[in-house]
Length: 289
Image 1 (cartoon, one colour):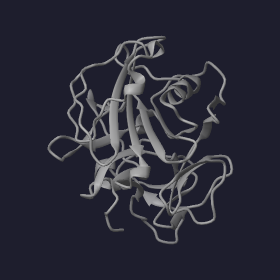
Image 2 (cartoon, one colour):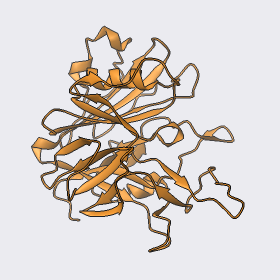
Image 3 (cartoon, helix red, strand yellow):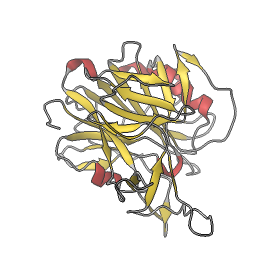
Image 4 (cartoon, one colour):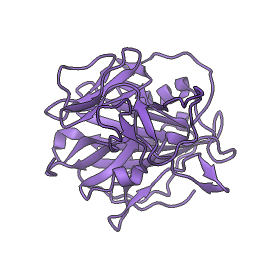
C-alpha cells in the first residue's frame, strides 16, 4: 500500500486491536486538524479490501459540513445539475475533505436512450434530497434515505427530513439503525460509500471502500459495509452512491486537495475520476457561506 501523508490524518485507535478487521495497517502517518481524523484499513477476509475512513468531531466546532453542487444547466428546466469533476466541486480554499453522495441519472434522448457514459457538463437529475445553505436543489424521494444537517451542524439520518435542513444529501437506504444491521447477508460486491453518525449526531463518519480491483480491493456487499460502520461505532449509517462514483478527497501535508482512495473507473488503463452532481465537503467552521 502506498504511504499517504495528509493534514487530516490521525489513526483511529478504536480500530487497532480488532481482529475482525484483518491485517492492521501501520503505514499511515498521524496528523490532526480541525477535529478531522483519517485512517486507512486493509482487510484480507473474506476478500481483499481497502477501507478509507474520515471521522469528524462536529462537537468541537472546528469543522462543519457543506454540500457543494455543480451548476444548474437549464434554470427552471428538468435538469437539476451538470456533472462536474469532484475536485472542482471541492476547490474552495475552506474545504478540508470531501466524499461523494447522491445517485443520479441522465435524461433520455429522442429515441428514449440514456447516456450513462458520464461526462463533465452532462445535465442530470439528482435522486433524493440535495441542497446547501437552506436552499434545496432536489426534493426528498420517499424511497431514498436522507442525510441532513441542522442549523447547529448536527447530522441526521433516516427516511424523511426536518422542515428546513441546512445542508442535505441522500443515499440509497439505511443499512444500520440503533447499531443494528438492517440488510441481509450476501449480495453483489461493489465499491461503496457510506455515511454514519453516533446517537447524538455529533460525530460523522465518511467511509469509502474501493472495489473492482482484483487482488487490491474487490468491494463489499451491503451487509459487509454495515458491519464496517457498526465496528466504527456508528449508531446509524446510510449506503450512498457507489461503484465508479465512490471517491474521497482530503488535504495533504502541503495543503493541496488530493484523492485518497483509488476509484474504479479506468480510461486507457489509468484511473478516471468520474464527474459528479455534488459532493459533501467538510469545511473550516469559520468559513463564510
